[in-house]
Length: 251
Image 1: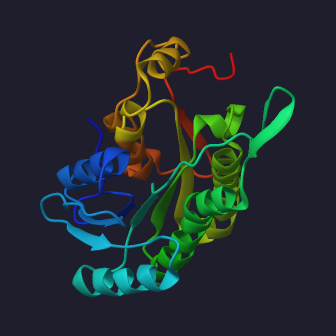
Image 2: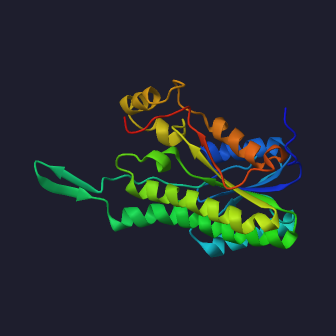
């Protein structure tokens, strides 16, 4: 069993009302961390934590939450940028030679706003508190395996998740001098509420493309976040950890 070094450390998890975010918040709390759960949807904090209604696309919302956290507990030590949305559409869709649809500006901008710019907003705001506290810190960003391999009908989602990888590598370089580590996690197909809502045939295909023969569980990703935030990963920064069961996309 690893010693995480996270007892009494302040941890922020975005998108924490359900799925991977909720599992992550609960796991960090179980390690003795003080966890602030951020989400636009209603949720419940783990024991000893707090829930804050935060929209990651709104800098005023983020700043207000940070004021409350720092007054209550002090500066954050870990930020898990987990919040994200999907709004899938093909770039162009044809039927019988006629254009019947396309990815709209609204669909593209909405996904970028949450998945990419929201990560930027939160990291910029939280990193300022980490630097001021001079105690180091960890920023963990949610990418996706499809950012590495592409996926049909997900131009906007993949653009956002590939952008997260790029930002992760830049911030690792820029913030290293402040003892702040920055890494990304690239989940494969995870059995969240979103996946459980898709047709059984599609879920079966996901499993078929995963060599380990199952969907991942939210706890699989939460465990990766915990390890990357822990003292056991103290020399790891600027990396992308795929937690995907060996998934092969596009086949």
